[in-house]
Image 1: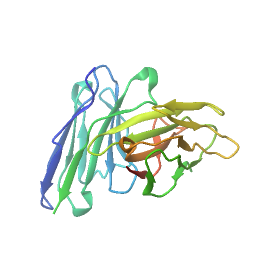
Image 2 (image 1 turned 90 degrees about the vertical axis):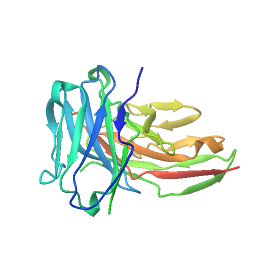
Image 3 (image 1 turned 30 degrees about the vertical axis):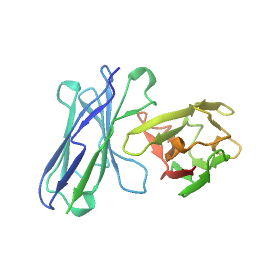
Length: 114
Length: 113
């Protein structure tokens, strides 16, 4: 079974530029999560999707971050414009409805904002 | 509110040493508890879990017991290997949400040969 795919793996941009990350969850997983992981900290949930609907986006900085999951499969997370403090690893995870507490993570995208 | 606290790292041990990484939680009710591991350059992986009090989760020689009396879920391994070097995260399922997890800050483990 293929795991959660993410791209790109690394991205370096200047502040005020925009960037987009892509995630393809495990086939059949209805729930998809985007996390931000700052060095030395645990993952922080940005947004949770159930199929193509948003379950929770309370910690998403909506003035600059946006995410979508069209068709309830893959998802994109965008930052526009980026700030220095957005430098982090962005993790995508998915889970199935039958065991929703078990999350499967992708390798992450390491973003550096200069 | 809900929170998870784990011991700060890095934890540095010699190969074959005994490992304990402490984790305590604060939550209403009895949440499911998890240990995830993040190897260098890889994504987080579920290592083990326990869904109710006194349950013991185990995998790859690691164990953790859900202790409701002390609200703890300490990770242990009897004999660590260099390949166990990674960052370990303790997490608890939020009891009042849609399957979200509360994460500890992570503990970096370094095993020296």
